[in-house]
Structure formats: C-alpha cells, structure tokens
Image (cartoon, rainbow, N blue to C red; front, side, top):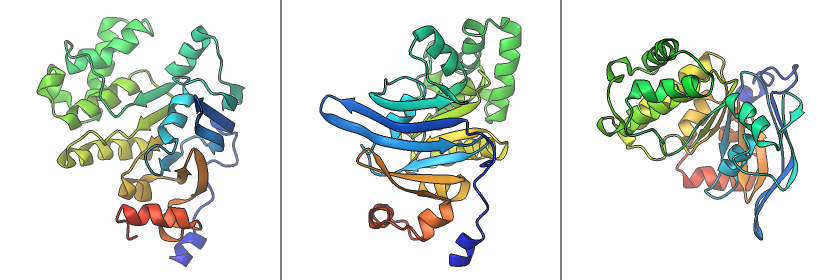
Length: 261
C-alpha cells in the first residue's frame, strides 16, 4: 500500500489554472455553521469526491458552487472570476454547470426525450429538431434510447437518474455536480448510474461528486476530500485516503461504513 501511495501520479492538471477555487467559504443557517472556512481547488478533467458524515457540509458546498445557496464569507471563483451575485449573471454561470440531485426532479408529464430536450430549447434557444436529436444521442449515451418515449412513472429509479444525467449533459456543461446521486436508489440500480458516471470521468468531464459510495470514490476519483462539521479534515489521492488516512476521524468514518480497503 505504501508503494502504491508513493507512486501516485501528480494531481491531474495541477500545472494549469484551476476551474474552481473555494477561498475560506463560510455558510451559516442562523447560528448553525454549515461551512467553516472551506478552501479547495478543482482542476480541469478532475473527478473530486466529497465524503464524510451526513450534515458535514458536502452538499452545502455543492449548492454554493452554483449559487443555489448564498455564501456568508469567502469566495467561490470560476475560471478565476468570483461567482456573481446578480441573478442574470448567476443564471449564465449555472448554464456552465450541470447538477444532478438525490431526487430526479423530472417533469412527470413529459417523456424522457422531452425532459432532456427542454433545457436546450427553453434556455439555449435551440431549434426543437436539433434539441431532440441531441437529447436522443444523450439518452443513447446513458443506455436509455429505447426509453425515449417513456414517462418518469414508467421508469425505474436508476433509469430516471440516468435521464437526469442526460438532461444535465444536454446543456453541454463544463463541470458536473453530483449530490449523492445514488442515495434514493434501490441497491440493484445503483450500479447502472455509477457506470454512467464512470464513463463520463473516463471521457474527461470535470466532476464534483458528493457520495457515500466508497468503492466508486476509491476507484474513480482523482482526489478525495473528507468533511467533518463544515470543515475539510483531510484531502488527497484515493490511495492515501482509503489505505493510509492521516486523520483518526477519517479512519473512524470509513470504519463505520465497513470500508476495509
């Protein structure tokens, strides 16, 4: 294990300016400190997994990334530019980030194809035929071309989440944000969603993934960040975090999840 860690490659694209930078980010909910001075960098083409106990700030950081939550201190920079506060400018930033939530949030009265095509039509002003062609290609990418005409109620949870991923990809984002995308799924459908995410990672998509799927994080992540009580307690390549964590709390957390390396 030690040799594996010693041979670990340099952080992906660390010689280039980072895509996302968090500088001492703070988020409060009344007296509750959800994020307490989080500083972090995300590089182009990197898969970063955020792990840690529930309520430790992982999802909050993700929501602050595209201004679904307003930060109370610090800065979030995208390509070196601070996240804007004006709603019109924020909308443009959100177009550059695809977000996949725990719940699928598909329109129940629209088919899988129409769910995926809607964003390009309504937000990007794309012609319907072009948008539907893009949507069909993306449904094929996530293994659901045969379900293009199906409505969400007729799809399994895993299928709905794959439609949600295709919908996010339809906007051609620079970064994909995943907020525990498998937490609402039956165990037998988790693998099909993780397989799609792994394919995106192999294609070079920049991804930030909040997950409790430790096997996925160990196998697919380039960088793993461990959260506790709104702060980062440890970060590093997967080999370090999962095989030789330097913080006792990290060892305890992984032990509680039954992680045995």
